[in-house]
Image (tube, rainbow, N blue to C red):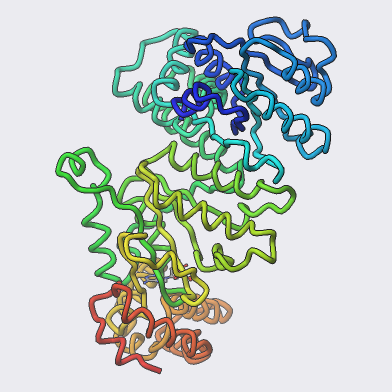
Length: 503
Ligand code: ATP
């Protein structure tokens, strides 16, 4: 992406919008590009506090009367020499009529002059009037090499043994996805806590990183203690996942295998879709980040939602290989392409950006999405090749129900011989895994209130008192099944159950 910035500058794009929270790093990159450019453009930086100041000069010597953004833009128009004019945080002013007009004048006058304006801001804010003239670029988060330099600086300041190359790589890898400042802070904090920087401190760094990622509010670092064994049934799906345990390794690349892109798990609510997604993180040994689409949408300003999505995807990419988990994809993107009227087109733009990202991503981010309602899911997601596989998780078969009872009883009691699992499986026809778990909990509450141990009969009573979703939502479940039978792969081998469980 830095190369792209360099290309845009060399190609004399008059207006570039650089989205980044890292001012210093991006200023340095711009200065370097300008230096290497044959035209040797001077770089000027504008802030609302100091006006226009030449890069590298002290901030107390602004060019005349360039504090106001309009005046600063006018000033750039008057310059005769080639130059790169970086405006920091112009997003706060950019919707003003004067600023918009001045920028359009500047764009017109920059043609063929080796003059370029770069709007540098952590927030993308492009008024419609400028949309056609501006190129938006995300400044990339620091690479492994850059982070290694941050660690090197930190190690230079502390006493003690230097880490081995392997430890060093782990320490650096742990900070991937952070800005340079953030990485510096977490190294400092880890050092202050442990008084050293060794492999043992990787955990401290990772937990700090989780905090930082959480703070941005759109991605959530999920920690899941359960393993695939905590899921009853779904053998086909589990097999598929196990087969791909090392799919992101160098060995798989050398073997000539493509990187898995993602999977969509469709299914009846409460049948373990989210659980299986979360346990995959442990199975594959990759971090899993939940993308909260509800938080991506931000109607406070035009372009804010798109910027949120871009930032979140950028963070996921920077810590890849990783799993990006999107629960309820049907709700997240139900707007799809048809909703442009209701929200000024934001949801269709977000949807478009997400699809493009999925299509073009080269970094190893595996998308794991779940959905309950097929009719709300935009058809584009279901097209062949978008996901590696679409699985359908149906209501559990009797054998699966038995396994689910066993798992949840074993979680709560060490001795479960007194339960007749086969009878429980028969009594719970039409129940989802979540409903089976709830029936066990309800039985326990009942017995606990009577100050005794819970029994088979308590569970049967709880099952009888429950009206499972499959009966209250018969139509939806049948529609989903009909659809899935044609187009998705069953998550369990016993697909004959489709027929048997017909409502
Ligand atoms: P929703 O569509 O409502 O989000 P879901 O299909 O994602 O539902 P989960 O959230 O994964 O379902 O399931 C809820 C809980 O039900 C799980 O945390 C687990 O305790 C239990 N459960 C569901 N299915 C199974 C299963 N096959 N084996 C064991 N437990 C299960």
